[in-house]
Length: 286
Image (tube, rainbow, N blue to C red; front, side, top):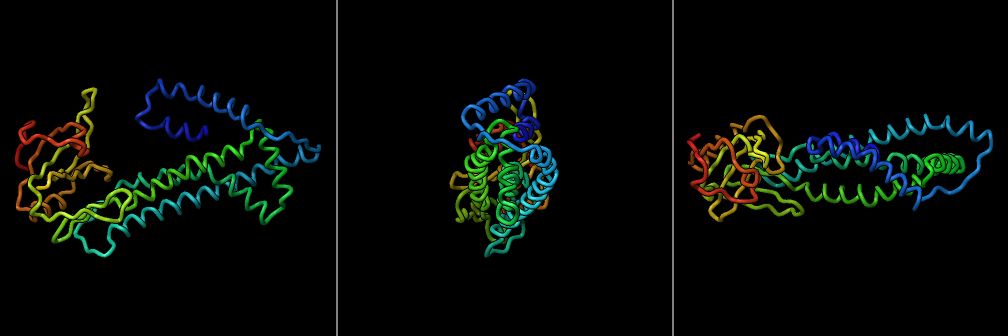
């Protein structure tokens, strides 16, 4: 739990006031766990009391190994599956995939929640089961709450929903072929197809304005289609310092349109949640 809060505290969206509340949140979590998930009372012999703490090094090393294998394997699997779905049954000149950061959430939380449970299960199944149970009880008594049950709840109510959401995000992509644009969506294998003749406007921007008036750099290409829909390269895409000029040139050649340049857009427009009026702001040919 402490590790999870530390990860969130490191993100730029958390300010110093929020980070200052973390110790209080951790204290409250520990109090609630000790109140509602108390450790089972257990007594240990003098020999066990001396021996069990020494096992922490072996258990810790096993947990690190499990975390590393799970984290790397699950991340690579998600990256591969996303690319495989993007190229399934079609040939594309350009493929725009989501930011790789999208696939890190499940491996990170899994590396926090799973190693202890997996290590104990392996130990009980193929090792000394009674000694594993003794160690589990010793750890729970040291923490003064049922740490095993807490981690199981985290797996069920945190890691599992994250995993489901990540799997549903695997179809996200945009592919540009010689004849059409295909856009993959969250939670479905069906793609939306647009011919290049459907593109009525190409807009290029450097980023968007935040509510506090500050500027956030987020170069993007925005396409407006004849059916009223639009596509933005900033939505769930890799954050780059500049626009892929190859993609922009390819789209302009296929549509016979020149891109309009607008330095700054409202965030909602850039992310495609609201349209932009044709006369809003000043634009120039790109």
